[in-house]
Image 1: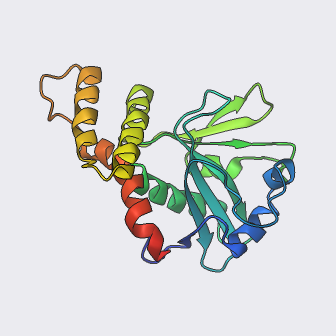
Image 2: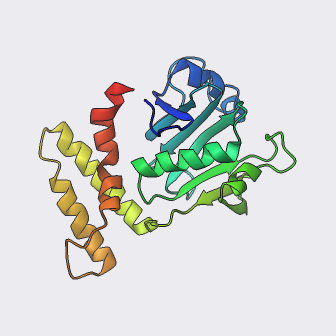
Image 3: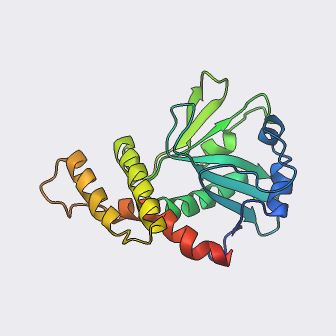
Length: 220
């Protein structure tokens, strides 16, 4: 499915053989369990992007439980074998990620020992990402905070709301009840006087994956 008019990326399913072939040439694949067949992204919400010429891959992943303290939407893997500037592909991938998870913090790790460049992560910096330095795991952390960003507290509330959405959906109940719960929870965080004082982007983030899974994915 073409997501942006004139853009480079197509969204494909986890396990697409063209995307998997590119991922297996990414350095992180060598450190992971063997993923020669089947899916390769792992658990969590995900968006797998493949360039139209099948020469680049980008994977967004959102995980509720992590061993580190990172939060938001992770660039799980990025490999560019095309002639398009990596920074250009990053900027377009940002648009697609924020369309699905509005207001989310974007982040990724770069392993400087595995990147064949004298300036590993430079393409992220060219795209406006911030270098937060080497972390305790030896990897360099990059992040991108959107203009209309949510706080971590709101992000955590949204995680809980999504669990309710999925539970009610599995029970064939009215999952719009989760929207009321979410509004009330963020109302308490913000300290506002009105329950209706809620950014539409936050609701879109909370329920966007629900809609994506139930409607869009069948068309991929």
